[in-house]
Length: 133
Image 1: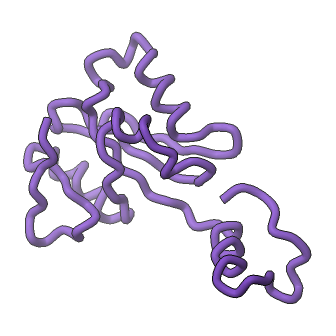
Image 2 (image 1 turned 60 degrees about the vertical axis):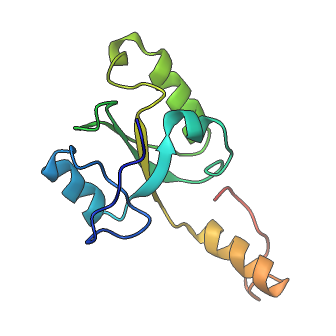
Image 3 (image 1 turned 45 degrees about the vertical axis):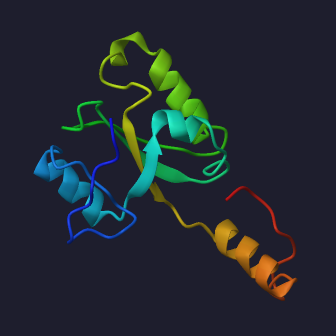
């Protein structure tokens, strides 16, 4: 399945197939989802490791969201996607060529991490840079 061409009214970081149910497409737009690529692509990279996010999987035909889920401590996106691929009940609904869309949940750890990277120090009242982001 080729990457669909975005219509002009969508942000550049969200490319939805023309065949996607309009109600499903609206949900992804409303909640600020962005493209992650196919499951195969997401499995081959560590781009989303240690991030808290909500993800949506679209069926291989590109017509419907077939799964909405989230990650949290100990449940990384790649691990969750591998589990979905192995789940026999999801065969033909979730495949390596299925598209994944993510909404990254901004936590204080992300902001503290970037603050530390940008300034070389933590805010005065923060004692340590702890946790996953």
